[in-house]
Image 1: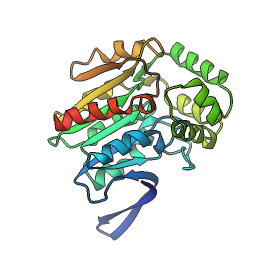
Image 2 (image 1 turned 180 degrees about the horizontal axis):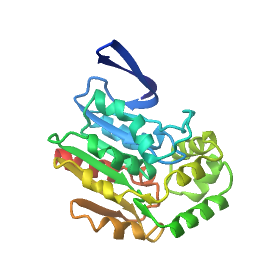
Image 3 (image 1 turned 45 degrees about the vertical axis):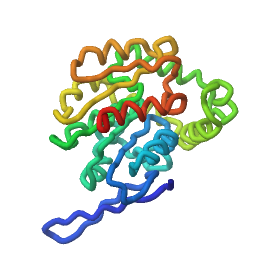
Image 4 (image 1 turned 180 degrees about the vertical axis):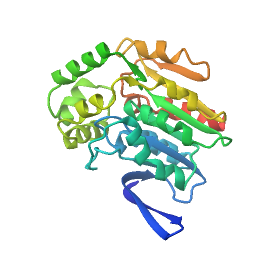
Length: 265
């Protein structure tokens, strides 16, 4: 595993131009025939998927996890729309085809914005991990209020104390994501996506793709997510019992199993 900078060379009529997508983490063999693309959420980093990525690498996948614009020391612009975050990742989809695409939280909305670019006939397993695809103005206000009550820059020990299912490594990566994020990052992305509405993008799913939405236990999280996703007949919705929003830390094997069932049976 490592963090690398991808240089993609694109040929055009004027010669060669290079497009660089910086700051990505990678697991597995570079010559693996199977590929997975993992997209993190708001105020997180590519390493939020460290356990999921390691499991997929052990199954023979080359796993690539980019850092989104405005995260993990990547400079942000003034456009915080989810579609802008997705467009920034297009060089990855232009350079290779992926068997598995996974997005957590806001990363799930980024994945939905990329569905239209996935292969039309090649099977792709798409998994959204506890992503809110619709939020009303009231729900957004509640989230802002909850975020405002969170202790600034929680430490590793804070995360360990409040999340008994996490490993210390989970807490380290989560703490890093929050501490290196800009102070206004949360509000910038919320303000840049009003209304928070992405469910219409389910319609962009290619016929060959299978789409699963994993939902945290409604006892501990937003109970409206299942109601929203259940309206779409081509989307598989799965509640993961006894989990919080951070399924990739608490039950990473569930994410891997769902991803693999759609491409490996």
